[in-house]
Amino acid sequence: MESICPIDQRCSHQISALLQPPSPLHVQEYFEQLISKRQCHGIKVKQDGVFGKGVFAETDFEEEQLILKDQMLVGAQHPSNKIDCLVCGYCFKFIGSIEQQIGRKLYLKTLGVSPHYGCENDSSDEDQDNHYVKNHHNPENGASSSSTSTNPLPKMALQSLMNGELSLPYSSRFPLPSVVSCPGGCEEAFYCSKSCAEADWESFHSLLCTGEKSESLSREALLKFIQHANETNDIFLLAAKAISFTILRYRKVKASHLRKQENTAPSILGTSDLSLLLETWKPISIGHKRRWWDCIALPGDIDGSDEAAFRMQIRELAFVSLQFLKEAIFDKECEPLFSLDIYGHIIGMFELNNLDLVVASPVEDYFLYIDDLTYPEKKEAERITQPYLDALGDDYSVCCQGTAFFPLQSCMNHSCCPNAKAFKREEDRDGQATIIALRPICKGEEVTISYIDEDLPFEERQAVLADYGFRCRCTRCLEEEP
Ligand SMILES: C[S@@+](CC[C@H](N)C(=O)[O-])C[C@H]1O[C@@H](n2cnc3c(N)ncnc32)[C@H](O)[C@@H]1O
View 1 (tube, rainbow, N blue to C red):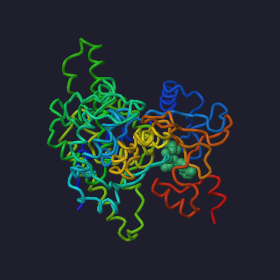
View 2: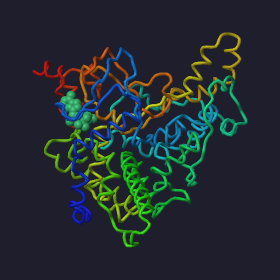
View 3: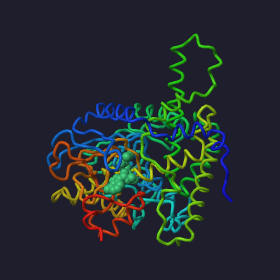
View 4: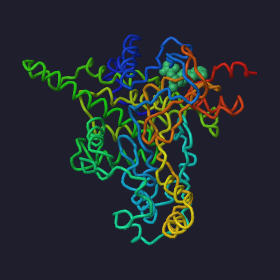
């Protein structure tokens, strides 16, 4: 039976205001501000294209020229990747040291810590056919953890690597920022600097931290929410970040308004302000969205006659997740954000727009550097490094992987003959999205990327794009359509 969310009924007026597309003027102003902040003046977002919003060149670009570096609005490392890579929880740069990266990964594996922070083998089969998990727009090289570790090393050696007692040859050529702990004491989030720790705390983490300084209502409920997300779909963690971001912005803006009007009657405190909520929700309101259970493609192994039941199952999954989240961080003044309708639309927005978050690993660079040394330095170095490389197996090169919503990049439409692509260059070592021209692009031309492998045949491309909720009408598809 369908679960009823009382907030959907109670706040129907506010929910429809939140889901109303912002006016073209507001959209224009928002993107102009973003473009100026990002200093990527070669592009413009236009709203009147064939596919809604689109990004257009305001200048000529040469082949391989950088078009855009976009900062994410919300993003997260996949839980399963947290064993492989220790990265800043805000900017996603690798942190610690080469020794710490290697030691930590091997140590956690010897402890049998699984991607879901439980016992190994308890969930991997489930993942194989988990219909709720999807790969997002894949920029490039998304190497996945293959867990082919062969030769385990003694725990003592790994601990020495982690705590800095043991250093590996030439590792000082790959310096990483020192690890800064979470100010809330959760021991789950780490940062590259105090400023990243503070920015994350203020934007998202103060409500989602499970440490003793957490500002959540219930750390137990938060832990249940996180566990449920880790066991089902980590997109819920991203949705929680979007909600937390909006609540924290709402409180900040409201406090500053109140400071400005010191004489305002105290009764305004505690009353909900829809226009303020709409203002703080604006960055999310602008993203193209549909309800998750309406837009998700029907998996190939589900019969068409079971479609309604499948969509209901997804809706129920979101409902369960939302109940945990509500218990953990509910805010009466932002009540509509806890409606199932809004939750579904936030997740749908990620489904339709997100880009894979990929940051190359310095551990891979390190081993490649050792491999490139010449005799006798190489032999000497490998005497020490080879056991670690053997223990890591294929996993030595696993990059940071996650998913993120990028406000400007997400306005780029898809083409099966794109003129640009998401591509991390050697120097791009954090979570920003980087868009590069694939060929010369003239001023006025639309900048398009491919969300999928465009080398696939026509029907297969359409099947993969169904996951993104549309049938492609790019020039190539219109020509190839039978
Ligand atoms: C990531 S968004 C791109 C920005 C979007 N046009 C907007 O208005 O926000 C992807 C959505 O744009 C539309 N779209 C993008 N490329 C398309 C294409 N080649 N053919 C048809 N629709 C496309 C689809 O509605 C798709 O779900």
